[in-house]
Length: 253
Image (tube, rainbow, N blue to C red):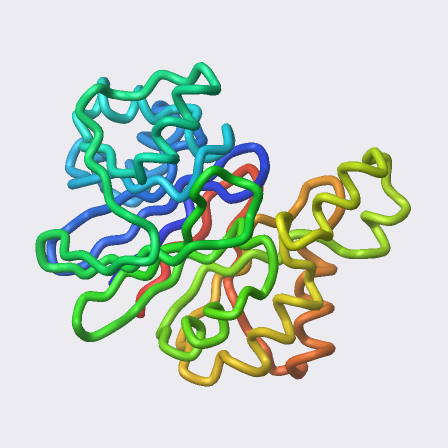
């Protein structure tokens, strides 16, 4: 299974996963040209993508949904509630969206897709697990909090993109409004560096590869992400980073 985080963070999200000839995109929060060029750098034609799956309705995950469908002819999948919420925000959505339900497992070509509800403040947000029968990869960002099902999901994965969104001290001393600070730290917001690190320390035993992403550009740094995880997990901890304004390396599990 091959994975590329084309971009991850509040400025836009798009993840590429390939296995057994099936090519999937998750979220369309970056421009079509950007996604096309970043995939092209790896020798991948975006028009060969078999489907686009959407985690939730927020703009940084959905702004280019219609472009991906219209320009690249990629079928779009999202829950009905997410679709309605996206349209309610004035974002164009194709008329022939395919729907799945949260907290279900369904087959797409040779892959099984699991959509697990999160507590993030979206209409019907999910994180995804892609299972090709040999390896399981989780796309676990915009989680809200460490909700009850999450540890069990982590225990089952061979690879993961996990959010490590903010450093509490940077958030506390930063320029965000009190409301925004409270929202980020709430059960409807994001995981901190410490929460991500403790989750991996306790439930990452099976993981072969870890991508840490959705790193805040205002309330975090990549250096702090690594420092915190190594302090909690151990100095030997290694991972890849899903960047805020660039794509990650291609990783394989």
